[in-house]
Amino acid sequence: MNFDRRSVVWLSAIVVAVNGFFPAVWILLTSLKTETELIRSPITYLPDAPTVGNYVTAFTAQPILRFMWNSLVVAGLSTALCVLVGALAAYALTRLRMPYRNLIMSALLAVAMFPLISLMVPLFKAMRELGLLNTYLALILPYAVLSLPVCTLVMAAFFQDIPPDLEAAAMVDGCSRVGALFRVVMPLSAPGVFTAAILAFVNAWDEFLLALTMMNRVNMRTLSVGITLYQGEFAFPWPLISAALIIAIVPICILIAVFQERVVGGLTSGGVKG
Amino acid sequence: MRDAPVARGKDLSERALGTLLLLPAGLLLAVIVVYPIATLFWGSLHSVDNANPAAGDQFVGFENYLRAFEDDRFWHSLAQTVVYVVVTVPGALVIGLGLALLANRPFRVKWPVRLGLLLPWALPLVFAGLIFRWFFEYQTGVVNDWLGRLGIAPLNWLSDPTLATIAICIAIMWKASSFMALMLLAGLQTIPKSLYEAAEVDGATAWQQFVEITLPMLRPAIFVALTFRTITAIQTFDIPYAMTGGGPGDATETLAMYIHKTTLDFLDFGYGSALAALMFVFSMVATSGYLKYTRRNAGRNGG
Image (cartoon, rainbow over all chains, first blue to last red; front, side):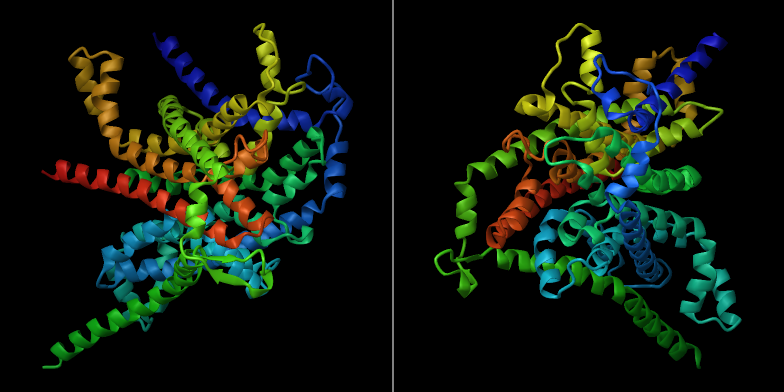
């Protein structure tokens, strides 16, 4: 009985882990194979003679480090902007007696549901007229706004739990209201601010449609679009693409591995409360 | 004596401060969301006259919408989008629920399960599309290898319209189900253990417990997860873009892909705007349907 229960638990863990990890493991194996091994029939699972040649080519065939830098700049700056603006809004909505509070909250949620493709057409026209195509700003502003609703709501949930007395004490000590937000409320809600930041960062890092639209110069491509440039006109060099994919997912893997608990908490806060 | 004016002054300044703090968010939303949506509808009423392109955009009324009505490619891309919604929303829910039930066990080592659910979520959609394209390759793909081991002849997954649609749906469901599982898992963990213990005392089977306790208690979480999934499914773009590029022909093209092509490849902004405006309406109708359902249920629970 006891043994049975344990093996069921083990089996469950294995199913969930294999489902999640298999694609990544498969491209890792592919990235270590040569093109000649790849076309062998029947296909091999483990590479015969593992090679890092594809990784070397991945760095030279396309400016992948440049793509990564672009993604980092765009995701980093849009996250900073989103968290800053979102924190101010969340503070106003939770700690101050504001009229139309619920209306503003619902409006924020409605914005989160707008289809991106509908925004894409006019945004592209506007950015083109402003000469902002192929600039970081063309992605930073939309990304910050797209994550703004969820970040504001996540931070609002945390701000709500800070006792007002702490803030009052800080103000007695000569802090202004805005000073209290940055010196008391935000540090105390650090997990919430942090969660919001991770969500905004991953959203920006993963985005494809706008990145494809706003940046058409190779040097300005972000990672998600840059990866698609490894495919040839007619053929797909899978070992090379796999190597590039592995390079591209390493940063995001580290991020979620280090902050897994926070990320799960942030992702699911909406589901539990809704 | 001094108390009243101070309190009122504080109230006013609090409201002023609140408005000031909301201003940056409002401004950003106005510029990046409200203004584009407004110009989208205005732009959809214009078109460039092919006989005289130098004259620029001309007002054409609802001509672009009438054109969509007669455009087979629009109807096809819409139908294809509906297929992705109808298949992947319930599909991802069922798989996600399965994963959540599996993951909702007292593991001593938590990270393999947690990362097993987080990795598909964190992976960019376009990466998932590329990886699944690789899985479904005719000669070297792992899916046909598995089929071969079962004695099934290899299938030409990505060059047959039906098979390509199936392959895309599988990739979307894999990608979407882990996020669903995370939300449902959070819901599962709020169900009090005592409910199950009481059911066990009453001799309820595992299936009865699932139907009578788990599902009803999960309803809010399922609802939120379904809403999110539907909204994203309507906008499906990245995965078919990476897996088939819309092909063979335009067979797997979604509405979002057609809008993108119309605007950026054909540079037909008027028509692209009209299609995007239609997409906006579809999306809002789906969302409001869900919202109405929540409100009705909230009323029932309250009463």
